[in-house]
Image 1 (cartoon, rainbow, N blue to C red):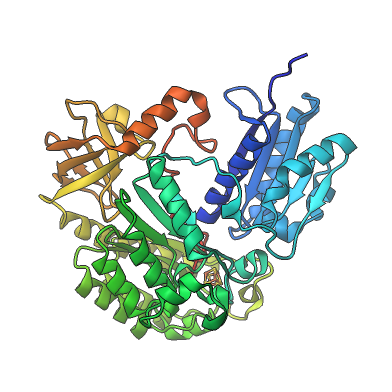
Image 2 (cartoon, rainbow, N blue to C red):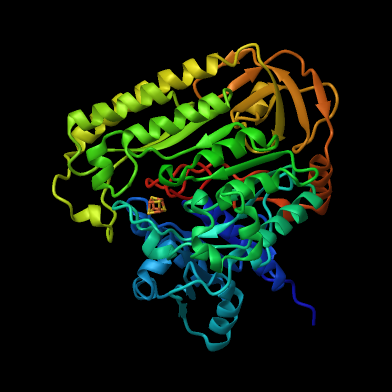
Length: 511
Ligand code: SF4
């Protein structure tokens, strides 16, 4: 008797690393015969959790509680919990929510299909958490969410110990992929139609340190660094040689590891886009020290100055935490000073809140909520003003925009389409006369600037149909399998803000 395949749904929380891991989870499940659930209730729900955000555990248990009656009414339904919170809470999850079938950690996402099967056969919950990476996630099957833009993970883990961040204890020490493997994946993605890739790492520009001593590094790394440049700069330049790859981005770099050769590689590699997301966290040297972030204000601003000199059009974005324990008004003023000097095009701003398990959670000098709130509002108002002023500088510029799907929430009402400029600014533009698909390129003139987006309301100057557009159309023809991670559309996954740590920048991980 033929049975229909089991269906799955993945609910993703947190940073870009999680979004990318969810692509792997989808790929693994589909390789094991599952199909993505449509409208109907799925047979398997997977929570890919984040431990960084405040009350992450309350939210998870709340969501699990909501699912319980659904599961009770659906024999055979399974619930799995993975990601950072699973790595942290382990079997506590099945103690608090005994209706959960599988708990897996950040180091063994490849085990999910086997654990689901074992739990089904043995009718008992399976908890499997590894202490170190079992398989580099990038070697696992993937169900890419976007045919035109893709994440490529170059490293996992982090060797830093920022006092507000739980990531190192949950993701482990940095492990790097060999450059040959990374480039092979990039080439394969471009072969499938992708025009844009984003290199991902918790501390992306420390790439290379995961190999240990240079003498122990793979030959390709030694070749890349023979002229004295860093492995990450070498990798950016190598991406510049991939035929058909039009846009390269990376996230998130750490200011400590941001070397001049990376700026040179960005400036001199035409397909590396003029955008940089570099977490600041605080402008105060005293707070940076307490955060155990080893750069200081002067170094941070020095990097910005060099990036602006080498890449004048660069849009620079950041993450900032307000109200870290011990932050004084004078410290906060230093953050405002950096914000004024750096002129970020946008910033992900967070109010500090305790993350259990991090050193900062038990530090003296925790600030009252109202103090943090008031500073936060001042910071947001300042950044808003700067974002708007910076966006206004774009008025009248002609930009080539990569058409996206799912990025313009009001597109239908405003009869516009949306996409990303080379510097990653969001642009809403008039629907052109000729058909245009996500993944195609349009040339437009900016006619209006808002703080968080640009508008191009003159007729589109040119439409360039691309392989990525073809790939999008082909995927559409496949049917509902193309629908993204519980999101309503196909396309590049929506930007998620940094996980209050800088370890998960807007669509990112790290630093
Ligand atoms: S904030 Fe970034 S650099 Fe610091 S420990 Fe977390 S992942 Fe590492």
